[in-house]
Every structure is written in C-alpha cells, then in structure tokens.
Image (cartoon, helix red, strand yellow):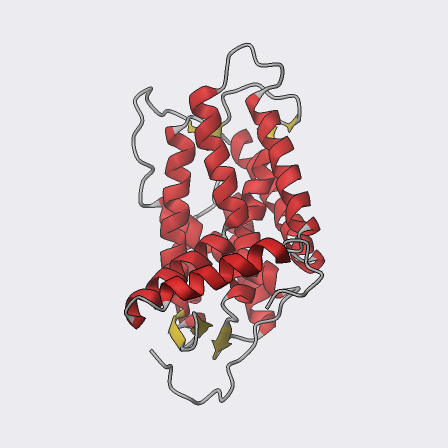
Length: 289
C-alpha cells in the first residue's frame, strides 16, 4: 500500500481501486494475466518511457531544432530519473544501482563504438568519444527494471548461487565483452557456466494472491528476448546503427539475444549489491506454479 504522504497517493490509490474492481469482474486466470502485464509495465516505466521518446523523436524531430535529438533524449532521461525519485517510485538505493550500471554501460559503449561494433549517426553536444550520454540511461533503465520488478513482484530466489560466485561470473562476462576483440570469445563457455550455476534456481513472484514461479534461466531468456525487441526499435529508428548495415532496415540478429542474456547477469549481480536476493519462505517447498 502507498504511504499516506506519498506524492502520488491521491492519484495512485483511486487508480488501484478501479483496477481491482475491474479485475474482479474477469475470470481469475485472465485477471491474474492482466495484472501481471500491468505490473510488468509499471516495473519497466523508465525503459518504456525512453523507448517511447526514441520512437516519437525519430518520427517528428525537425532538422532545424534548437537542440540535438540525442541531447534532448539525455535531458528527458535526467528529468524522468528526477521525477521517479521525487515521486518515490524509485528509492535512493535503486538510483545507486542505476548509476553504477550507467557507468559500466557507458564505458562499454565507448569501447564498442571505438572497435567498430556500432555507431551513433546523429550529432550531439553531450557525448564522449562518439557516444551520446543518453545511452548510459538506456543501460540504467535495465537495472531500474530489475530493481523495480523485484520490489513490485516481491521476488524471492530459491537455490541462488553464492554471492562470490555470481560476482566472479559477472566480472568474467564483462571482461569478455572487451577481450573477445583480441582473443578467443568465451561466451559459449560463459553460457555453460551460467546454465550450470543457475540450473536449480527458481524465481518466486507474487502477482496478486498466488505465488508463482519459473526457472531463473527461463526468466532471463524471456527478458533477453524483450531487450532484443527494444534493440530492434533502436536500429529501426536509426538511433544507433551497426557498422556495415544497409540503408534498408533489417532485424537485429537473434544471435544478439545471447549477448543480452549475458548482460542481464551483469545487471542482476549489480542490483544484488544493493538488494541481496531473498530466499522464499521454506526453501525446500515445491514451486506453486
């Protein structure tokens, strides 16, 4: 429940009551499905808003605008982040996670564009080595989604690996994003290690009354798929382009889902530094699926 002094309480509470009353008219399975979708949308508020702005600005941005499109996206990202904190939709601890992931993502972007993996074709004042600074917020929005989803769905994790093991795995994945340009790409070894490490891990989440679960690896695969869709939006709007891409848009290779899957490990481990994964009550209980 929203605290009485919450800035959005006068708006959120009536909206929640209306949603609850509307869902009660639906069959329970359908109501749970709709509520799940609403909670997912609420969890990815930052990223969804940024994608919406990317699409809209790609369609209507004038050539003679007084500010570059990339710089406008940066300004919007800062305002969105400030609004989320002011409205207490994100906590200070969540912002710490976002900032940390923002920095690590920007460093990787600078390296990848330098190595010719992709480029940002438009002009910007606020950029480092060809990378517009709004891109760091796109990485940060992934961390925001994970942190908010854990809170919104009251997520618990059974058989989660020891923390030091996940830190080593995340570090190895991050290093491989750089080192594979010079030495053998270890991603398939990292896939195997990730699968072995998280094979027994289940994610427990609460939609309404029931607590459901799914394998951690399945949850990561589904999330990687939606990130792949988001990347296709980025390339379709020409917000970023892969080197060698033709003028006609083509979908991003499904091979990139693997990269997103590995990146999600880094994201989750980063979030776990501030929000350590909680085990479900009764670790030995079977998932209530």
